[in-house]
Length: 165
Image (cartoon, rainbow, N blue to C red; front, side, top):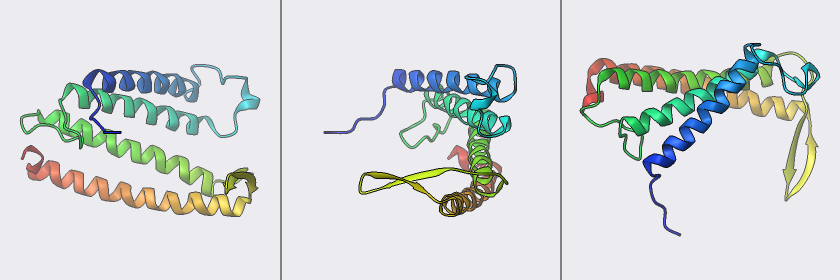
């Protein structure tokens, strides 16, 4: 099977869908809409739901920006793209990293019980909280380090003007 780049209308569809999902969960997380199934269905604070909603919303906006800005397959905007598009693209990427880092950090380090499961050779089994929290803790640290790297490299790129090259 040969791979082909996504068509612009496919990117727009995915962007609109992700943004719509994000708006819904952001509103639930902000307390503007009720939690589906009631508060007993909530297994994390509402701010975690808000972070997840924002991640979907921002990813949808990023996809729409990529389509509108005629970005290439690597997500790079054309050389003649306005600076505001580059800044917004950078801020969205940074905000996505922050959302992911906050969610992973909560799972790994916040007090309270956690339930994890996994599978080995196709057999599902419960995993211990120590294993789950350790995995999410390592992931959270990696995400926060990547956030710093993205923040620094993106800011340098924007300030140096090399983003226009």
